[in-house]
Picture 1: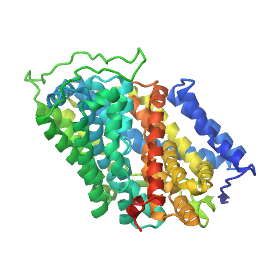
Picture 2: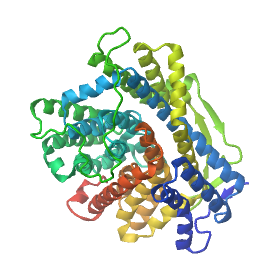
Picture 3: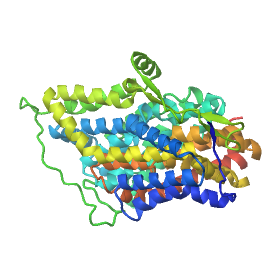
Picture 4: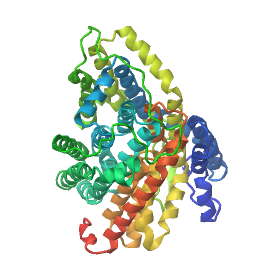
Length: 557
């Protein structure tokens, strides 16, 4: 029997909205204020969410449990699979000294910690966002930053802040492609509109990133380098998104930005070099430089590890992740083997209702276990190949993989629980109730509609998922209010990118990569202001594009 979602079960929309937000509020409060371990906080939020979905929103209990189970599976694959394998690769390179040489090579480009942060978190991270997305950039850059001597909070929080402006075009344009699919709007028009919003923030975010780390004076001392990195990313981002499409925006922009910054640093260095991590903006005595054990810088034969050897594992990772992200390779691997499992008792038994959608829509629930084409599999193969090239035996690789599993077990549990909450809110309609609350803001909808995208990513952990969740609602509401449909659909994705730094899954990935598991609440408290402030700025830009000349001329018609 089909169950129809109800968005105002208490017959008072304000109370229904408050009820729908309780699971998220429980999760955030447990992390940020009660300092609960992340897996326990997520488990508590899941229990509360199931209770509210069943008792208040009328969702059958069996469906609620199945939706949570679907989320658990989707959290483990692909997100948990990415985290496990990137930490495995990082562990291999750390144990034998390769990672130490890599750190020294980055220091060879510049010894200044601020510039290292700019190069690694912003430029290098954007490449992994464009090629793979889904947690990969935060895992990679967080691990590198912690190895360079950044504190766990700095490495985690700053990797999250940097991973914003590239997100809408991440995973070879997956969020934009999904947005076009659910709205029926032209893919190139959406790509162009997003490409007329995010370049402003591609220029702003590098400055914001260094300000968050080094303070205003520390940022001012290296502004020429920040400007080079930002402009070199923003301009290709605009050009590729407007004149080619969403697929290669981040890949091209990140390569140009990295190349421009490295070349610029060959002829310019700041007068004052930050050779130690000076935490101007941190006041917690526990946040000190990370002390690393000395590791060997010679390989098994006793020869010194060259810079080329040190970068080889990460070069392999970059190549394979990029290949795994291309549609032809995905199609080929899915053709070899993939398994789709229909969630009995949930698939095609939940009906999404107006006004969230124009006409009733049946929700599918099919778990696509396409293990071969998952980005995590590309990372796993890169780790195995790198391990062999670094001289690890098959037995040692197995042993280190088991040690990695033990290391990340609580993080994997947390990711699964977070996804369970996200899928529960989706199938129960709790997220739609929250979304509808934003739709009642009238002339201010340009701001609140943008914040709706932010909320969607904060809840689901994915700009792609947020676009699927609220894309049609944005289109319908824009039509009702007489706003440009392309503008508001794009705003969902552009605003959503700023929610990426506070979504629970990303925070768990960052904590795991920096070996700071158990401090997820500290990370959340640090990045929350930055997330809200940047999202509001996106909303302001969207409002200008909707109502104020000459910004209105930027809107794709």
